Image (cartoon, rainbow, N blue to C red; front, side, top):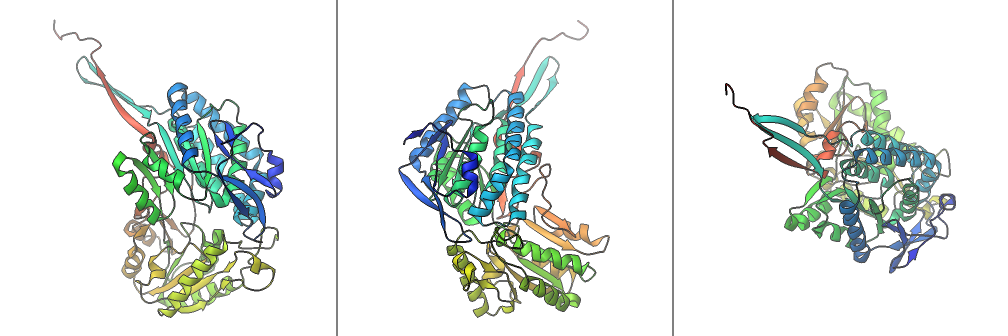
Length: 502
C-alpha cells in the first residue's frame, strides 16, 4: 500500500467525482490498495471516478491502529474530548453539506430533497451523542463499611458495516454512539459509494484534535474487510446495518469470539389503513413510503393493509399517485424519485415482480424498468403496486428493496394485526385511523420496534430505533444504543468501618 500525503480536496470531489481516485483513510493517512474499482453515476451509467478497493490487508492495518489508539491515547477516558470531537465533526459536516448532498445525488442516485434530508440528519445525531459521552456508573454502600461502584467502560475497537442506500446517515448513526462510548472504530463502507465515502473521510479528517486511529474508514466492494472485522478477536463489537441474510451470516461467523452485535436488518413495514382514516393524508404518505430512496429503505412501506370499506378508494387514489410519480435524475429539479443503486438491482426487483404476477398477484400499477429514452441508460424503476390474497407469496414475505408494494384487504382489527405480524420482520409499522383508542391498542399488538400513528418515517436521535424478530437486535439511536459499546465493571472496597456502639 502506498501512503498518499496530500489530502483529497473537498471542492474537487464535490464537482461529481470525475477522474478522482478515492482512497482509504487509515491511521490518519490516505492509502491506496492493491485492487481498484470504478464509480458510476446510477442515473446515467457514466463513470465518475475510481477507488482503492480495500481488502484483508487494509483491515488488518486499520484494526492495528485502532487498537493502538484505544490503548495509548486518552480517548476512552476523556469524555470531555469525545464531546468536543463529536461537536466538531458535526460542524465540519454542516459546513460541507452542499458538497455531500451533491455527491449523494451523483453517486447514489438520490433526488436532492432526499440527499438533503440524509445529510442534515448527521449533525443532529453527532450533537445528541456529544451530550452522552459522560458514561457515568453508580455507587452505593452494599453493607456497612463496604462501598461498591459500578463503572461503564468502552469495550475496545468497534467494527462498523453499513450499506449503500444511505451511507452518510447510516455511518454517522453507528459511529456517533461508538465514539461517545469511548471506542475507537474501523468502518467498512460499500464500493458503490466510494466517492461519497472519501468525501466524508476528508470532512472528518479536518476535525481539529481528533486522535489518529480513532476513526478508520475502508471502502470495499467485496467482503474481506467485513469478514476480518467479524472474526478478529481485537474487534469485540460489530454494528451492522444490512440484510437479514447477511446478518445471520456474520453472527454465525462471530460466535467463536462470543462477539457482541448491534444489528439493524431487513424490514417489511405494514401500513394499516382503517376505514375511519384521513384517506387523503394516508394516500399521499403511502406513495412517499413506497418511493422514498427509490424503495431502497429498510422501512419502505411495502405492505399496504386496507380495510374493505375503503379498499377501492385506496386502490384508485394510490394508483393515480404512483402512476404520476416523475422518475428522473437529481439534475432535474422536478424529479420525484431517483435511480436505484445500479441496474443489477433493477433486474433483481423486476424478476421478483414477474414471479409474483405469475403466482397470482393482481397488477394495480405495473411500473418496472425504464427501457426507453434518456433514462434507459440509468438504473430507474417505476413504482409497482400489486394486490395479493395469499400472504405467503414471496413478494409479501421477502424484503424487496425497491419501489414495490403489495396491497391486501382486511375486515377486522384482529385480522389487520394478524396480517401485519405475519412476517419474519418487525422493524416498523404505520397505523392510520381517527379513532382515539384504536391506535394505542393496535400499536401494542404489533410486533415491531417502531410504530407510527397517522404518520411515517419519524426517526429521532434521542429515541430508540431497531427491530423485533429477524429485523435485528440491539438498538440504534436513543440511550440504549450505547449499551453495545460498553462494558460494566463492579469495583468493591472497604474504605473503613466503625462498629456501632463501640
